[in-house]
Amino acid sequence: MEQKYYDSQNAVEIAEGVFHLGVEDKNNCFANIPYLVVDNDEAALIDPGSARPEFFSVVLRKVHQVVDPRKIKHMIVQHQDPDLCAALPFFEKIVSPDVKIWAPLEAQVLVQHYGCLRRILPLDDGDTIVFGKDRTLVFASIPYCHFIGTVVTYDVKTKIIFSSDAFGGFTGKNNLFADDDYPVQLTTFLGQYLGSKKALVYAIKRLEALAKSHGIDTICPQHGCVIPKEKIPMYIQAAYNLHVGGEVDSLAIKHKIDLSEFTENR
Amino acid sequence: MDYQKSIVEILDTAKKLTPQKTEVENIFQSAGIKVTGDLVFVSFNGNPESCVKTLMEKLSAMPVVKISAKRILRDGGITV
Ligand SMILES: [Fe+2]
Ligand SMILES: [Fe+2]
Image (tube, rainbow over all chains, first blue to last red):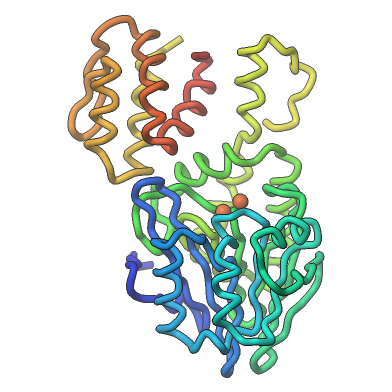
């Protein structure tokens, strides 16, 4: 696949009605990527992004480029971290007056504290949202990857999985698609930010099962790069190989705490 | 413990994470680790262990490189 680059001006349509609204972050190597799914005059905004003005202004510009914000009927946050949902109260003022804001069951109690006026509606494993002309988003829980309430979102029409932090990577570059550097970018982010190998393996196997039953054409993480179909097996393998929870090992050595009987994260 | 091997891996990883090569080079130089502008290791200007210790302090200015360095040092059996 030919490499493409995103900028601060233009949303990129990566599949039918699916727009990458990414904001690059050279300083922190932590690109922040909201996605907008548009179908017949209605839209859903996934992981709306940061409240920092230099991030929010880019996402807002890209939303306006694609759709009148009042067409946004759903805002979905896949876990509670501020990089993906601190912008909710800003968007709440300009999207559809009857917008629904969704967050995973266990994250809902946290997300409310960003200050939205509406009640945050809970999402659980297997829930679906339908908008536009039968555009269907299905939610799958991947607990502890990296928060108890974490969901990923599957767009039935395009076979895209919006994976949030799972399959995310650190990069200061603005390439749209994962390149040869992505395994290192993935290892540095996901390897360090996850605590449980069991949770990671469950998440991978859940995606593999979904790929087998319905097909996955693209993985769209909230950080880093979009993973096209032909590269998915390579990154699944990279994820299986991750050593997670390593900070516990480091600090156990430093503080002379014996954890030798626990080897579950290798 | 192979300090040079870990430093080479930290530099290779940094190249894949950040386009800010000059900033990375300057931090390594300030920790007494000579590297080229293309982030290739040249030499330690002093005791490798203390250079690495200083490097980890200075890398706080580039958190993502420091996060990767922590992993690489741990995998190399180096505790700082
Ligand atoms: Fe997160
Ligand atoms: Fe995130």
